Structure formats: C-alpha cells, structure tokens
Length: 125
Image (cartoon, rainbow, N blue to C red; front, top):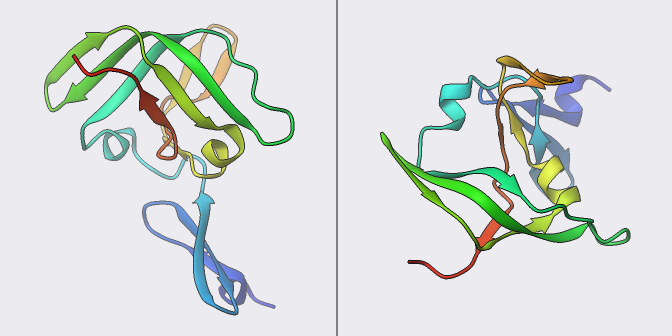
C-alpha cells in the first residue's frame, strides 16, 4: 500500500488517516508548523502550574494555573488561578509543534506547542 492509500499530511502539518468512513485527523507532524502560525489567534499561555498526575487509565488531569497570560494581538494580560483541564493522551495526539527549536535548561526541542484539546476552567474577572 502506498502512503496516499493510508492518509496524508496537510501543508499546516495536520495528519489525516483514511478509513472506510472517509478521512479523520489524528494529529500533527512534529515540527512542521512555523511558530508564528501557532500564535495567530487569541490564546492562553500557561507559564507556571502546579504538578499534576494524570489518571493512569484515562489520562484525565487538572492542574492549578499559578501564572498564565491571555494573549490577544499585542496585548498580554497576566492572570493567576483557574485550572488547566484535559486529557494528556488527547492533548499529545492533537498537539501542534513549532518548527523552531528552543533550548530551555536540559530540554532541547520544539520551541512552541499548541494544545487545542485542553480547557481553562475558572471564574472570569
């Protein structure tokens, strides 16, 4: 079977698999997306959060946000509190990774990751 029979990768790095029911997005190709393309719409940047331990079976987790920023255009508004909620398995499967590489302490890898399947829960204000 050729690659085209199994699926495809879009220009933005989205990976699609072909099934009997049609195509289904299953993730993204690591490092295929320029960082600027990941940061084009309003987003939440979580800088510090409490430790979390995902459920070993389901992958669900919740973690207190200790410092975050709501980024809208050129405006970066800091906030504390609320929770980062999601499923680590789904988050990693749907993450989009930047092509740019960063060095942070002992880490070397994609400089930016965008997790579209996570939620921020808490009071607005």
